[in-house]
Image (cartoon, rainbow over all chains, first blue to last red; front, side):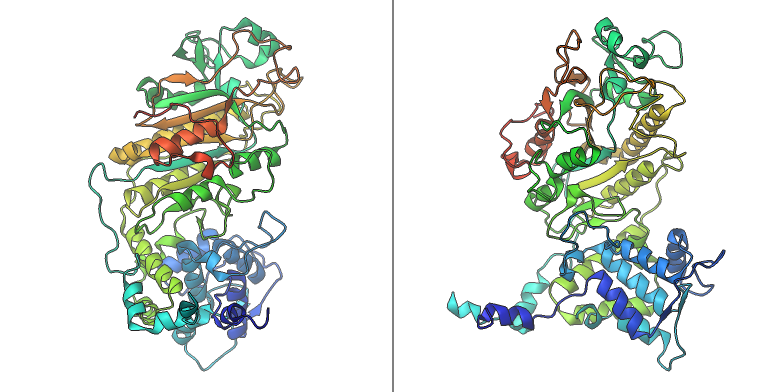
Length: 145
Length: 419
């Protein structure tokens, strides 16, 4: 198997991240700190931010913690935690999620996360600009392993 | 063959020829939507799953049948014209519609709504999970099929340059759409309209990145997503009033929005799980006939949502068929709590301009007795649900052999549609 050209060709192909991998890598890239504790009466959205993004985050923001928000966003991207109906679990190919809702989910998540608008998720003070971070998370390159 | 193996996908993408090829892929061009003329429009199927088993004989019953009344005396309701709140609505030939389904009556009278009675799955399971699986995989009794029949149907339809050929208005991808390739499952369209509100250069810069990227499927999918997002965001909100607080109504409103936006939608799925006040269920083990019980809540939600949907569609309603699915019917014989437990055959609604409606398809017995009931309790299945769904697949989508959707099915199709 190791000597077959098909094996190496597959290995050399760039692989798309699943929503799960995308979210985890985004959090790690930004060195974000995720609060998993319940926060009383917390509003999920920050005051700043684009109107559409705010509307999105607040309308569906029922979680009271950063970790809860992340699982909500995974659901919106089409990979709700433990939500697959069969034993095999979700596809490990990112191409399974190449559809509009999942992709727009990535972009909106990237903007709100890098914009520091997700309650319960703290970003460290960094030198890179918010816009640069948003663009990096939304870029084609970041969608691959 | 050997020669072509040496060419990797990346090399093709890098080559100028590859770039040209990708340029021709639908979704990447500036204006991928052609507005088809009348008659050239594609047919659209909307399925609604009534979770947990609708009592078909409560929804539609031969109201004057004394042998039926002997087995379910408390689940008959009042006959048409009796002036009571629970008076059935006359469908003719001795059949009466549940009064809470009143908003469906005009469609029946206009000949656009067909009712199929005594319909169900050949597998006799009375368990919700199993029964739903058979309706969704389209392969009753054969658990080796894990993918859904609407998914398989989506693979056999010509999607042309559709931006969104299929959608499930659910938080999770339902079994009916399970399969290897992407399918959009989203409880509301707000996320999809995201790009429209973004007038800043940020998004434009991102779009440019993807245009340069030429990463094949990813670039194409992103371009199509942004295009779809802009179209949906620019759409005016509907003037039609849908039932408030109803998740089914919200799903149908979003489906109507997609249909009117001409984004190539052909398949849509929605669920009827509970009523706006959360007290409704199709799983009517108790208190089923009460006009303040769980059934009228669900029936009213379904009928009013569908009526709003058809009004909202305007002339596009001519392209659409709505079909209802449900786990199973319920026992003919009522239980001690004025309800009925999980049973066998039920009823399906088929609504659309091409439907030969205004009549009840399928076979119901003239005389009900314990002897003729399945296991002494249940309405036997006289029509396989696949015969109903095959009618849509064959007459509306022009797929001659429906066994691609329903593996092994050779039972033909009910003649539900006008030629």
